[in-house]
Structures are given as C-alpha cells and as structure tokens.
Image (cartoon, rainbow, N blue to C red; front, side, top):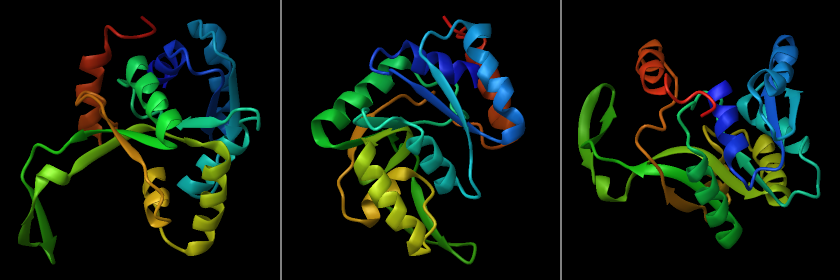
Amino acid sequence: MVHTLCAYDQAEEIDLIVVVTREENVSIYESFADQYGIQTPVLVTIGGKTRLDSVMNGVRAVPEEYEFVAIGDGARPLVRSEDISKTIAAAVESGAAALGVPAIDTMKEIKDGIIIRTVPREQLIQIQTPQVFGRGEYLELARKAQKSGVEFTDDASIYEFYNKPVWFVEGRRDNLKITVPEDATLIKILMEERLCE
C-alpha cells in the first residue's frame, strides 16, 4: 500500500488521496503520510459491504470542488506516477479513461470447462488502474448501478453498462495486481528498489 500511495503522491495532478479501508485499519493508514513522507493530503474513510459501496464511499469523501477522481487499487504497488498522470490527462480530454495493456496471450472462451472458441485478441485489453472519471457523473452512474443488481468488477464496467465511453490508455505490463499468493512473491521482487523513490 505504501508503494501505491507514493506513486499517487508523486503524480503532480493529484491534490488529495483518499484511502478506503476497514475500520480497524484507519489509524494504520493515517500514520503513513508522516511515516513515509507523503506530501499530498491523505484522507482515510471506511469501506462498504461491496466493492462498489467502498469505491462510492471514497468518491463521496472527495470534496465537490474536485472535478475528476482517479480510482486505483492498493493492490497495484507497481503503478507509476507517469501512468497516473497520463490517464488523468486522457480523462480530462475525453471524459473518462482507464489504464490497461493489450492482451498478448491467445484468448479462449470456455463453457463447462471445455474450450469452445478462440477470441480475437487484437481487440482485447487487460484492464488496470487508475480509472479516471468525472466525480459527479461517476456518482450518478454508480448510484444507478447499485440499484441494477448487476455485479461490476471494475468502474469502467459501470460506464460500459450505461453506454458511456471510456478512453483506453496504454500502461505497462509490470503494473500487476496482488490477487493470489504467487503474485505477492513476484511483485515483492519487482518493487524492492521502488519504495518512495
């Protein structure tokens, strides 16, 4: 989480960092700014029952004076400040943007454990964060999404669901997410030299 906070701190467009966490972790994250020399103000708020509830809590904590929000994952400690900046710039120009990388593996669709077809990878990306949206529009669409009963695995999916365009910004393959234990092993090796550079 410290690596992630440092990357957002080093992106000059970021004026406020909001961390969404469990209640028992609030004091831990509140201490990070002083402990690691983070200059950007850090506000810590409590998450909700679902991923969407938690993101909405974080976005609501951002004062209305901020036009855009960059939604990230603490579980992506290798994100780079320049990629955060690049995604923000694309969102300011187009309304919404998300970082990702083109798919390079052959992609297959399966049904009941059996491969049924190859999906052309030329039009596929692996989505990452940050994903950047207008604060007001995001909250409006997210409120509707909460009532829809549909499960959204990322915030760009909400925009897709309501036919709102999200601009693709090409990122880096090392912007990995810690999802399973082996991810942590690889990421630990990659990030050893990057702590608050």
